[in-house]
Image (tube, rainbow over all chains, first blue to last red; front, side, top):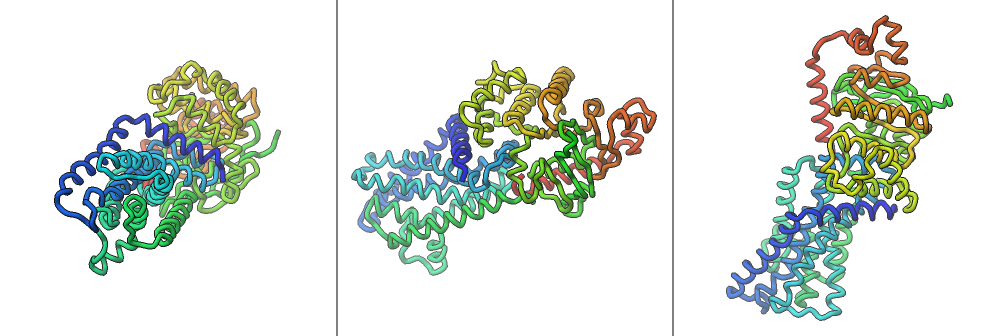
Length: 247
Length: 265
């Protein structure tokens, strides 16, 4: 475990992210779009489990920003490969696990900050979050971001072009998001869709967030936690395996 | 002083059906400036990539600074510095930040790191530009920064893959003078690849490589004597014996295509 390497890789990605004005702007516009337009437009339409729709989708919107931002940040691996910097990293005497951890942490941090931005809208749509809940919510958001980033890294490690990455990640993000219970409740779904829902790590992330924000639970707490943890560990392992390859 | 810091025995590398490096063997002595001279697609970059632990050999053995590139990659990495052919700087960071990043991942302690950054930037004449974003640098400046970076951690061996490609004559001369000076003052071994004959002249020994095979290995002076020719260029053309090479393009493209679609490089 090389903490210097992890810290440096994390720091560099963050410096690069915050120097990119256009990307920062994009990361602000997405949550605004979803929350205000979708939520406001559909609010009058219906209630879910006795709660207004805007409130119902709020945890899902947070999760959506977490996964989108997490996946997008892992494009930095493809960027580094295309523009040569990845070689500088690979040729250095640092363990490959540290490279993967550094990249995962930087992606999670960036995604977490985007998630925070959405969280800031809570008072606007009148969701109250007591302080003790916040202490649980924030690490949890980071954890969900971490899980999503680890998946993004595995995808990025095997992709060679920006376009390919864009296609695949949308192919992955969209179903993951729609099947996570973020925008519609997941009880009473057809059998096969149900399986997909239960395999989707985001389902447990959304459930976790919704439990804290709104008190609605679908799965037992330990299932949420266990699935997310195991998923992250598996993804990280594959990531390290990919980075160890020297063909 | 006759210690062999790089030992390569029967090294081969295949990319599918394409044999990029074909059973080559050579040794580089300590503090030597050793060159790999050959056209594009000859296998120079592939060889350097194997020696730098970026690529696994298909067969054969490569020992760098006493460590096997396959079994002890991290030990190899600690002792080498590399200046790549394609630029590998972070354009969005400043010169200082690029060097600082390098210093950290090579575990240079904080205080030493700061001093060393100043030292290497002074060596290549870029200290005044340390807080400029690398994107604003010219090709020559970037190459000088890469050299500074490659030397930061005081490697025993410096690998340079086509170090002056694409640079103007003044910058090329500057870099050659710098490398010759470096070789005289510090005890760094240098392994460089090039397809420029004038660049090969600064090497103490040159291996001429074509189609993945070493077809000659000696000092530039000896090579010219052996063939009674006035320039390495003529020696090279005599040895390789053909005009414009179509295979060169397809070989290189093929290789380039495969290398790009491999996963992590």
